[in-house]
Length: 489
Ligand code: GLU
Image 1 (cartoon, rainbow, N blue to C red):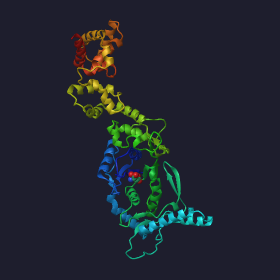
Image 2: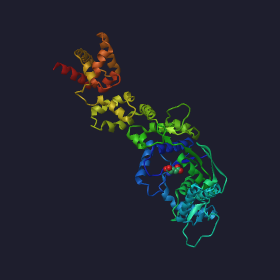
Image 3: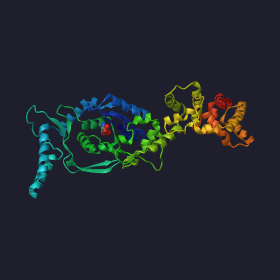
Image 4: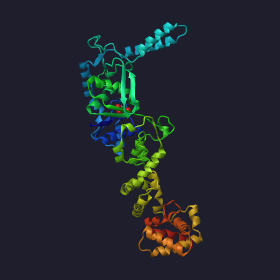
């Protein structure tokens, strides 16, 4: 079975996280089956579609690495093809020209509404009420055109729309990959418009024609389109085309269970990039937002491709959980390649001042040992502050306290020992510090605290020996000297 999926966003705004998840599911499903993942920009709503939105969607997908296997299809460009299919359907007798005017249709709805109100009036008999409601229901029911069975046009040049001849009666059943079996009555479907009076194709027609032309075998999308599937399937039937498999994924909800909205935080995928989340973390998080495989929490892309299935998509709406996103991000930061991480951190590190050569060397040296120091890139960047050119160092209160006369004496002694050290590695440094402590019967803390104060000003830093290694011998001794010299003044 060859598989083709597609992501079909409307370019009316950013790529929101729900859309990104839909794209991801389609991408993974295609990759899982060695199929194709396609992108279609549904820009038929000319008033609301913008080039900026298209660019933002492409940028979001590129950031996530959801690369389509062909250049995007622009839906509006296919309009002639959509029209051609509508005319073909007329020829087949599955669509027809409808001469009802918008005014007539409105009048019909108004009359229906009037009858419904009239049925509520006081003093009318049960029989009258039943009759009025029946009439109202008929008038307000999904529209079935009087021209559906080939009645003649009212005049030769009467304007018309082209409508689909909706299925006549009985049940309509959809075996949805996520929602299971869904049934509606055919009478709930109207003879929907395929070509408007001005000849332009409708969205509902365009989606089906494009999905067919693109060879789409599986439509995975938000469950806000579930009812549309019932309207779209008759078009496939009318053309004798294969009907794709549908999977309608429940929407994402906020942590409080309410429909996702601005007050739940950022909705735009790129906002997460800007907050310092890695794309692989975002993907792993979006994957778990609505899909599961056993108890596993974090999947690499390769694992996800090997395991993704529509059956694992949860029917219940997923809830946004930013704490979990943080944990997953921390995980992928630890896995990230040093060079890449450095280039991601660099703009953040340079936000206030460009990195000097010495700072760059120290930060590069520290990076492998510092990856667990932040759940987002800005947090991680902030953790490198003690490796900048910060002499003379600003002390926090606790740090200043540990630089008592005693503390400074110990630093002077240690500095002399460190000065002798030829090979400057965390291991040799650690050895010097421990033997210095042992020789003088001092605890590690009695030396480590003033040392940390002198080197970082009290900023949180990991184990002390690596800090000395990253700073390098000159900078380390210089920072110690700053404090001990101050003392002598
Ligand atoms: N363009 C539609 C949307 O952005 C998606 C239609 C579809 O996936 O079939 O909601």
